[in-house]
Image (cartoon, rainbow, N blue to C red; front, side):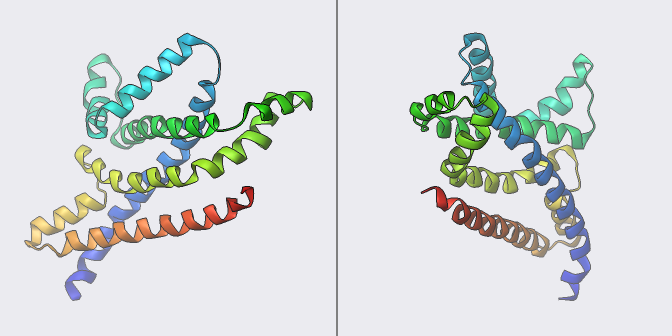
Length: 213
């Protein structure tokens, strides 16, 4: 137990960075994904082509490769980013593509009659989206969104590839230094705890939105 208490501060310090990355990516990627999904409702083919190519690239290539590209390749054309901004941008672009597809599927389930009813009521497009479409879409896509959120919790472990002192890097450093697997097990326990918290929040939100049934 004394060894656990000895290494726990460094692991928690790494977990703090993990949580910061998780929170910032979530803050940026979900709104961006929603915006992209609604942009796909605009009947302008060039915009659709651009978004489809973006989603194809983001979903078709590994997130680790995208991290490496943004941090190591972009400087060759004069775009230099620090480690953390590079991570946030790469994760946000990647997860926004997945969220966009999720919300696009949710929007497609809304009956066309509701859009027509909104026009009859002379609602502005923004009000139609805010008060009629988005609440229903949110309820529909909530389980899928939280599946991606859980994936994001685990994918944050990739930031160690850029040398950022996150939970995984802290646990690996301690494990290599002390020739012990205990730090890795503790890191796994912390990830399980975070997933557990996300699961509880997901169930509470799904219950809250159940009044749309």
